[in-house]
Image (cartoon, rainbow, N blue to C red; front, side):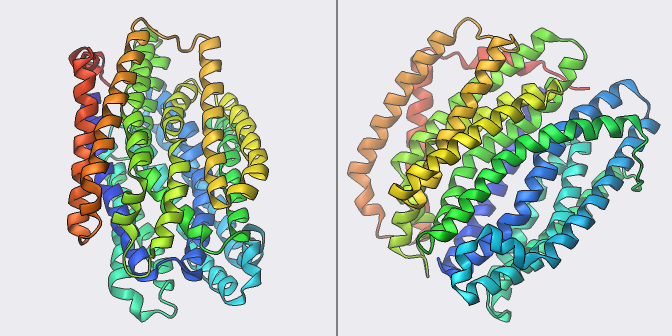
Length: 517
């Protein structure tokens, strides 16, 4: 029950956080629309996020957490705290150097990342200014990630999952109440990011103190676990950075094509991140410590059962999410963003990008689960190699797709790259017998297929009979209609799963008695 409770708790908190994220984006779209100022903010915000995903949420957590769990199982509190303290000190040193470079050389960074902005002096200057404000956010959020890993290792999943809420709340409050005091008003969002990061680290310090894992930073390279950590970090960083570098290349290209592309891509990405983050991030957050625990205890059957369960759950949720996003892409964008300065043309442009991203939704979620099996076994090099190959392939596709499809081509090449990455990861796992398909997968696949057909039929009829009425109402009625479409679509899908023979109770029994210690 502990595992299921963690999944449901973190899922609900993540849902609330993502909902607040949408509210934040609605405010940004309403108050700032799609303009050179929003393009400037999204570029400035993207750069520290690039380093955050490499240094903290990506490579760091995937290497640090399994090592911390291993030390927790084999060593005493003194060694564990020493390891945390040394990692804390190492990260602070790296972050200070990185922030100094980012702030001092902000203008050079923008020249590299968004060369298209050089054509507009005002746009370029405001982007540089915003980057200098936002860049120190890396310090707060990377330390938040470190503390989250520590909390997760001690089974305190909820405290860590609350953190993104505070950033979203900060951005909403600044946009709604403080933007009028800044000139240009978009600068308020830069300070809101910094404030949100500060609040998160203060709360995480308190959470670490509660579980007696608040350690003063120290710095040494003579400690054996630190040397092992650094050795494992290099391939992990290369793997994560390959994907982030691909997104940066996309940013460079989007700054060179039609004005507004950066914002259209941002809003589409925010929508697709809702299901990808809600399920993918939640599952990977929970699976990694449990799979690591089973691996170190040599509980092979439990490892395989949990991994198989994670893949099936990912498919059960990601497939209807993909279908709903494609069928209702236009109306999702219309409902969430088409207010104030966000025009109907912006809706159409964002809709096309969203559909292109949606084709990569299933592999995005599944990849997070598959990669957990590699990192639980402390194998960071294999996902890195596969990721690099997939990114190179997607960038080659950009050459052909962007010339024909503009900003939509960037999203489509990213989705194709996600599928390549997924197939290569699955092939390696199957070839090396880390994962083998159990009995019942053929029947499970047929049930999924018939349930998909049932869901598509229900969505098709809803679009015919309801959609024209829905377009003329205010935001509250639009959201209620969209929620109605969502509930009917997903009910038809899950009811079909039951009708065609999917055993929900048997599926639940797989994880009913999984415990973590």
